[in-house]
Length: 360
Picture 1 (cartoon, rainbow, N blue to C red):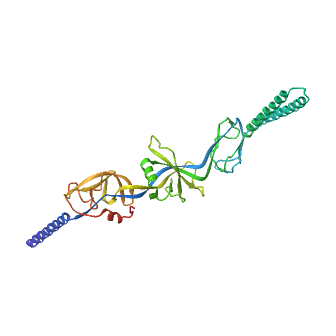
Picture 2 (cartoon, one colour; picture 1 turned 135 degrees about the vertical axis):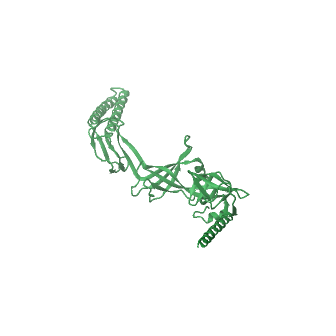
Picture 3 (spheres, rainbow, N blue to C red; picture 1 turned 90 degrees about the vertical axis):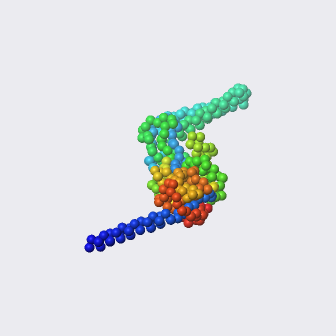
């Protein structure tokens, strides 16, 4: 009985050893596909942090000194162009207008008298001219007083939404004090900064990008329903950041966007001679991207690469790799540095064509 048990145990050991040998032999004879990076023109969609600004947004300030007598609007209220917003106590300025009117009337009488006397050769023509000049000065003072009086009534220069009201009824207002700000949110601008290389690609390869249409992701992560269009690029680069500002305009028919919001603009950028590899040919260690480069003897060596852009299934490589480097396409989790492997080369264009995103 013991002899039978020993024979069974020995057979199991021999069978296990045989299986391990076959497994090792299979691993040694595994063939790993390789490929190379490929240079080609493509387009990417990149996000840019943007500042949202109303098409019109102004501060409304007092132009005269006095007590805030009336506030006709509330915060968040929509107002129409020409609508009265505030009134500063006007009595002093009304008195100035009345005084100026009296001086005009007096000057008119003096001119009339001087004209009669001059026509009768009682006084010289200069007396008449002096009276005329005095009347002109009085009219100018009247217009000035009327202008100061008009400044006590503050009206909306355009239609929009009233913002915060920092002063309360009866506050003493000085010239230049902020009364509120007014935003016309009918059209919205999104300002975002673009690096110099991206700007050059955008300008020099305009035919490849298709159009100037952009989209906007709002702060809650949702996509704004309407598309925008790039309207303008500012005149110079920021010397500190090396970026240049773009401005896109979005419609705001549902009044979702307000002045001061933030978001992310998605813009299509053309890339000329971009160096592209499949993502599956890479692995990551501590936020660093690596590939396995295979030399002519079939030995694999890990190499750190810098990624410029990430797209579905592919990376655009900034540095660390050339088109002459053969890289392991699959099995990057199975091999180790300095391991010799059997490889089979696959055409990089065919490899890319099988991915979700195909470069143009």
